[in-house]
Image: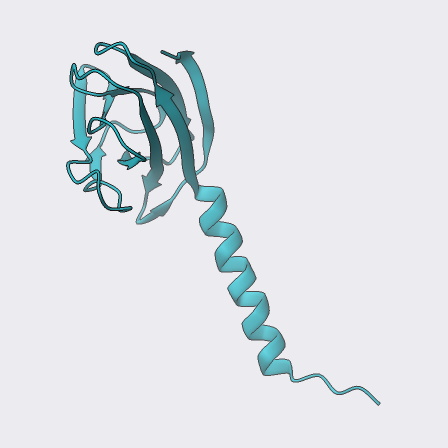
Length: 142
C-alpha cells in the first residue's frame, strides 16, 4: 500500500508554481558585442497592459569592457552599467516607469575595443508584481 503525505505534495506543488511564475515573468537575453568600439546591440521588448514600468540590469560574461544597458521609451531613458566585470553579479537594477507598450533596449561597451559577452535581465512590472511581456526582438546585432 502506498501512502502520500499531503503536506509534502502541497509544498512541492507550491514550489513548482512559484518557479514557473518567476521564469515566465523574467525576460533574460544574452548577446555579444564584437570588436568595434562603437558597437551597439538594439532590442525591442513589449510589456502587456497593466505594466507600470520596466526594471532591468546587465551582467558582463567573460573578459572585456564593462557593458552598459540603456532603455528608452516615450522620450525618457535610464541606464545601468556592470562596473565590476570580475564578479558574476548583475549591475544595480534600474527602473523606467513608462507603462505598457514597446521599450527600446540598447547595449554598448563605452567606446572600448574588444569583444564583450553580456547577459540582460528585464522585468515588466505593475501592481507590485511581474506582468507579461512579448520577449526580445532583435533590431540590430553588432
